[in-house]
Every structure is written in structure tokens, then in C-alpha cells.
Image: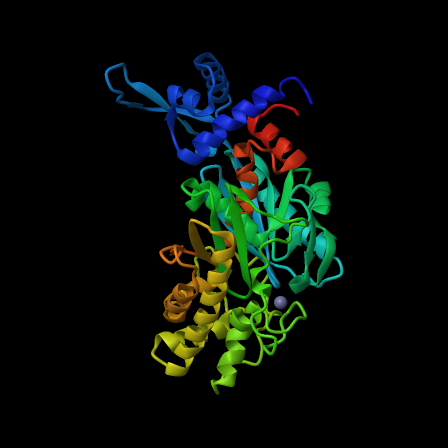
Length: 426
Ligand SMILES: [Zn+2]
């Protein structure tokens, strides 16, 4: 390790502090990080020189002269986030401060023999597009996948729902793009975004639970996403619920996801005699280059039957309402179990399924409270707004969080991201 690493770590710590708590004065930075005022003055001067920090308003201080506060420059860097789904790729271009600059949706068949070439080609075309625009430097590419990833900075993926086993996603993308690439489980990536822009600013221990096509969770413990021994922690959808339940996509019977994922909701609706399509179609990609910037729903989307079920329930159909209420109760009991084990401060519910949350809630709330351990019954369940690019924004946050990650969880790729941000050769 070079002799400059100590200063690098301190600069990263300053960025991390301002990135997570907001603007502070030099005196406050020195106090928070236990640094001498002289070091803070020198390091912040460098960061201002690199265009990463800026001097903000004068904050009135008691008695003495007003203290100038320092804040991050949102336009100092940008990242591309990529979400891989069973039928398409969603990509977003995001600034350091979380502002979304653009989004793309491209067809992708994960079962294709040359899927990694397709993926790399699609990402490369968008990288070229983004790099041609004026503005902040592109720091790297974050990729979110519905599966387990050995290590963010290596990026070998196991994702049964995509039919992927030991897929070298990170390696192939890095070779093709010549950029830092971080690959992570999609729910863990959402947790990284929450840590950077959401609940994680004020909570060090929280759970993210996602509902939609699948069901997932991320565990943030002491400010870090808990990944487990092989990056597989948080597979909440495969929590056993009932040994006699429906067969799950993982091959086992009666998993949580088999009851409350899209296929589970439609199966329950059919069992109650509602006319719904036989299966969740996964072979209905939108047209080539179908950028849905205007927010118009494309036709033939995989979520169409579930959306129809939601409309029927919202319109008062008692059978459709019962489907969501029963799914909500199953999810509520399982979530209570997870809370009892992990003891988070707060639970954040995300995912495309949250569009129907008022319907889920009728079953979720009573089942959750009934199953929570005494002393945890007042835990806050927070449902956040969601749109089609939210997963991809999480993937971008993998890269954008790296400059603030004083512990260096992103490894060598993280060092390359920081080097691009500071504009120095590594
Ligand atoms: Zn399963």
C-alpha cells in the first residue's frame, strides 16, 4: 500500500461524513472525526480543489464569528445503474447526490446462450451515450441482479430465477467497458441506496423487505449490509411457510415467495375461482430500445395480470381483496419472525408490489403485531414510493456509495471509483 493511503482514508471519511449527515463546518468535521483543525483545513482545501466539496452558507454560531459549512458537490460524479430482470434491463444515469439524469429500458433474455455479450453490448451502448454528454465524470457501473453475488468487486452471480449459475458478470463487463463495475444482489443494492439517501442516514440497523415478482430482504446491521458467507444473506422469499404449499421457483415447496410473489398471488386468485391468466408471462419483453421516459405502461408486461387483480380488489371485488389480505397476513407473520431475529430499528418496504400496499396492509398489520416479540410491537414499517427505475437507482448507489465507504467494502473496484472521482491516476 502506498504512503498516501492514510490521507486517502481521511478524505474518504470526510466525504462519508458529509454524504451521510449533510453539510458541516470544518470545526464539526474535526470534532466528528477526531482530526486536528490543520488537517481538516488542508484536506478540505484539496477536496474543494478537486470540485468535490463546496462552501455553503454561513451558519450562525454562538458568540464567535459565523462558521462556513461545507457540502458535497452533487455534480462531482455520476454512475450508471443496471437492473437485470427476467425479461429486460433497466438502466439509469444518477448523480452523486441521487438526482436521476436519464433512464433506458432494453430487452434482454437471460436464458440466451450469449446473454453476457448481450448484456455487455447493451450497457456499452448506454455508457457511450452517457459519456458523450457534458457533465460529471462517469465513476463506474453498478449492476443489481435477483440472486446471490460472491463479492461486489468480483461479481460472479448465481440466480436460479434467471437460470444463471456462476455467471462471471463483473469480469465480462469490466473487460468490455474498461470501467469499475460492482455487482450485487438487487435488494442489497436497494439497501445501499437507503444507506446513502434514505433511512440509513438516521438508522444504523434496519431491514429492507421487497415485494413484487419475487420477495426479498436486506439486513443492514451496524451501518453495513450483512452479506453472509457467500453473499446469499437475505433470501427472505425462501423462508419456509408451509410444507404442503405450492412449489417455489427454487425447487422447494411452500416458500414465502411461492405464496406472496406474483405467481403465488395469481395461484391464490385462481384457487378462489377468479379468472386470471394461467401463468406470469416472462417472455414478453418491450420493443427494442423502448425508452419509457413518458411513464406510459408498455403492453404485455409481466405484471399485467397482477395489476388487473389489484384493480379488481381496489374496485371492491371481495374475492380479489381476500387474495391480497391473506398474502398480507402471510407476509406479516414472516416479517415479524425476521424482526424478532434481527431486531432492526425500522423496516422499509419497497418493490413494485407496494403499488397495492393498502390492500396488503389489511392482512399485514394485524398478523405482524400479533407475532412480534413483546417490546418490539411499536416498530415502524415504512413504505416508500417506488417507480420503474428504483431497482436500477439502487444499483447505481453501489458505485456512488463507494467514495463514502471508509471501510472499503468494494475492494479494488472501489479504489478505482475513488481514483476516478479524485481525477488522479491510481
Ligand atoms: Zn423458494
